[in-house]
Image (cartoon, rainbow, N blue to C red; front, side, top):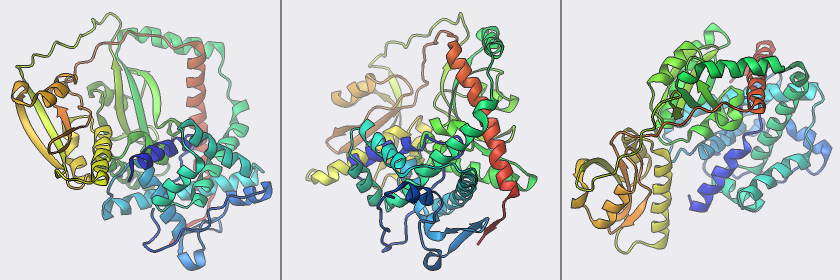
Amino acid sequence: MTRRHAFLISALAAVTTLSVAPAPAQTPPPPGTAAPNTGAPNTAAEGRQFLLSSVGDPNTQGVAAIVNDFVISEYDVNQRLALVLVTSGILQPTEEMVDQVRQQVLTALQDETLQLQEAREREVTVQAQEIEDTIRNVAQENGFEVADIMASLAEAGVAMTTFRRQIAAQIAWNRLIEARYQGAITISEEDIDAALERLEVGADRPQFAVSEIFLSVNAPQEEATSRQAAEQILEQLSQGAQFGNVARQFSQSASAASGGDIGWVLQGQLPEEIDATLSDMTPGRIAGPIRSEGGYYVLVLRERREPVGTEAVQAPVIDPNAPVPLDRLLIPLPPNATEDAQQGAVEAATMAFSSITTCEDIPAIAEQVEGSIHMRLGEVNLNTLSPEIGQHIINTPPGEVVPPFGSQVGIEVFVRCDERIRAAVPFVLPTRDAMANQLFTQQMTVLARSYLRDLRRDAVIEVR
């Protein structure tokens, strides 16, 4: 994977922020299988038909599931699995991991099919030009051309037809939810006042910036399946998958549209099980599965604010002669390494750097980076290291990851294993507009979950 390809995939993940409900997912076609024609629909009628069409031919690809007489082909599942893996940042998925993700993908495709069938029933349409405009806007916002996106997806084995269908489905479901519920949700001035007052009352409590992945449990028979899916997601995250991208693909909450971000919450504001977990977490950590209202949660604590009046803790001046606990991830390179090999090592180190939050993450990530070497160095006096390496480490705050740099033996990623020290952030009330938007999203989330649950309950779904 080239560096440009990695950046493009990051940009592609942003496309999956359109939906109020869970975004579908995608897997590489079998080796030697050619991707189908990637041409976009050219007319409004073609665009509407494109909304509910199988990417592959079930007569030649096999049938994975039937949802209300609509066939989801094996090729559909393989394509969606490919898109999920590449946008989630999973570097080298194992066979077991692919099998785990595949089941999640199939469920997501079933939900998407129900959403599209309901959109068609309600005469909700998406024009072909809207799909192309969305792709073009994402490309432009990230400094690329549409041709770059097409080339990156082709490199990952994903047909543009698959990508366009996912975008169309998300636009249609979002439009359907808005049309059905937007007029039914009223956020009054009194609602905003009450919410702000609750925050003011809690100014003496910690606040947490949280992202979530939510998997619903709508019936007793779904309990074990949902928990297993949450455990599989945790495993994927531990092996380098990006939390926000996984949330966009799998989370069954409106927050999926923003990579699982639910903003700042006050201690005591969330259900007791989640609140207790957050109170014990340190920033950067992931926790789960947590059984709470409606299903299972996987959480990441991005930041924490201390109560009003807490004295800010300043990071101490680092003594270069004091020992520092260090871990080292080395991607070795021979002295005569080719430019491609150097570039590949830099890209692998960059991906590892973006995936590591603590020293505990490194062993699993090292397994994903082929040829890398993980060394647990323990307490190291910085003055015993080369001046170049020592300077990189001393310029990195406690508990943080040193950005990748080159050395005589390869590309280095050092991680400080000492405790992170964070300054306390003053308590700040959100604006009335921000609070109104938060309340609206919360209500819309509940209604959207209920809507999809009703569609699934009334559907006839056969899994092959």
